[in-house]
Image (tube, rainbow, N blue to C red; front, side, top):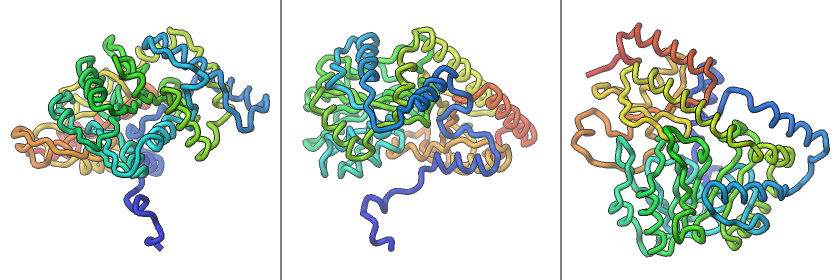
Length: 406
């Protein structure tokens, strides 16, 4: 019956990240793979959701108050003016908002520029719309953007650029210069941009998130997507949004209604409480995650990993295997699960392009097979337990887990 599947469906396989999370559950391993917290969401947010259910907010509904709050937040954070009545679409998480944004602007044959490494969801949405993903490799180890490489990726068929900053999996926060390069190319080429800004409130070392839409000429050509999930530790609530000029926001709302009708209403109601959070909430969030980042960097560096780039945002450490270590990222993760009972994500699943450098060719595998992603959005107890297991096994093996060095 496989021939009955669409050509796009045949290209999709289960998410390796989710499969690793399922493996962690089955094997009772510590899950540092998937980017969701294992600590409780704030009690007042949970109580707000419970109150909404008990108040019978359980039927189809669009909660306009979310849009009102978002308009205020965009003005305060980025100086951007959006009309909450026309420029917002509430969706089932950032994932649906992003998909609806792609479906709203991409036709078959349109080319879409992405930065590599890249989160897996983006390409799937582009291909479902009939678009063609074109990847521009960021330069390791600091994941810098080469302006010439980026500009040369544009063709007459380029319709949009996808930007995720702060960036998954690397923790990169695109600099003002890099954003100006992206904005300049979009304006000159009359291209759209779709941004994934779910980590907008999670930046470190006093770095501030800059929305691409805030740059000159970009508000009218940018679709911003984000959600409650990461900022408020409620990844299962599925409340997200797209913010864009009215023409695009209307198209996204229409697509959203055709697919899911509305985001979960009790959680929309609870979102009103979340979005009213005072500045102290976001500062505490940054401070707590920065402490977790520093902890996981110390632990992983202690295993011999090369930490040449300390994440500046988001919830992941993208660490390079020791220089003379012979196993690939996939082989390492298998050993990690089997020997230490800890699950992480092989970096190869995020890569789609190749950079040829003499340095990287000195090791037995390409740089796309040299990185492991560790999620640190976990409780202090979970991170400490993982650190203990990793240290014990490393001591037993006389070094790096797996014990295979050149």
